Amino acid sequence: MILYLDTSALVKRYFRESHSDAVLSRWRSATQIVTSFVAYAETMAAVYRKKREAVLSEELIGKIASSFRSDWESFIRVEVNQELNGYIDHVVKAHPLRGFDAIHLASALVVREKIPEGFLFACFDGRTAAALRTRHLPDQR
Image 1 (tube, rainbow, N blue to C red):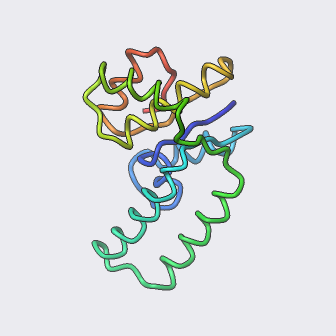
Image 2: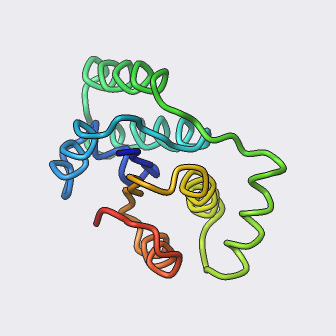
């Protein structure tokens, strides 16, 4: 199975949250993890936001950030480029998404178009998940 993780799902790999077990289970059974290049900035921002909000130690955050960076090297990453922009145009016209959510959905559409079998999009953002359902993308929620 090819598992596409948007940032709402990716963060659940590094922090114990609702649905973390489901993400970890899918992660372990995936043959490949895919995400967008924008997920790096979003995930690192989430890590340091959680540090500030939960007053987590510098040592713990360092380990989490290091684990993410290591995992990042193994991901297939979808580039934001002119080809993707065409998908983004279509997605934002049809769905009320924020910019990075539109990038994730468009990226997932590109991947699914190229690999239609055994594809799963993991997403825990309500608007993006609703858009997924209208696109008939299998999702984990």
